[in-house]
Image (cartoon, rainbow, N blue to C red; front, side, top):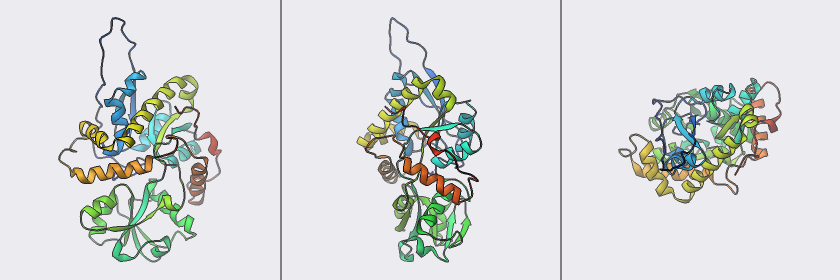
Length: 328
């Protein structure tokens, strides 16, 4: 993922099952933990450090939860949780609103990413530093879907620019290669990932970040209305464990990276300097005065972007799409 938004990005790896946690010897047998398959929306990556920590340190097990990581499509998680076949998934904000418009009762309960990580990157020599600099330029984008497209439209909208200000090319998830090869003047990327890869390959870039123009609801943990009604304690326990993992990842990035080595196949052979920078850049998007808290403004802004893009045909009651009630 590049962190292609855990949103609607295709994945390139089979699901891996997380370690089962730790067991302790007791004369009074503890009840079996609740097994939860958690759709992640992307392949194993350092950006999932908070969840790896929560498994590795036993935080989920302390809440009576056993987590199995499912690295499947984000849209699969949306459908499964919406149909109450699974209780949780990692999903981006726009997917929650789009799902609710289709009658799927998703509820976003933990704002993991506080700022939307999408940005537009261009070689510094191109002089593309503001949305207005995109006029007439060729911009590569994974496709007309998902977080990348939403972020691109949000930047144009915030700057008051028309949809056709630039020539938009669907290039798949090959933004780094396309920019290095000169196939595009700029590309839509994730600010915590591709810029680091590009600079490591000798191409410093300028960034036009969504977060500098508008606050949008980003990636987080979702459940559904049925789970909230029937098992609110499960939701609260899940959020307590996630919060502990997130707090630890933010406070101790180096230790978090060491945990990632246990869960991310091939990380030991990767450029660990680059991957550590990706983790630190991701952490910058997770920080908040109150971790996990959903900002109403971010949801209203996302709602307006989707309406303006024609992805929502009529307004929704945005307040039903998220809740801060279950936070630790």
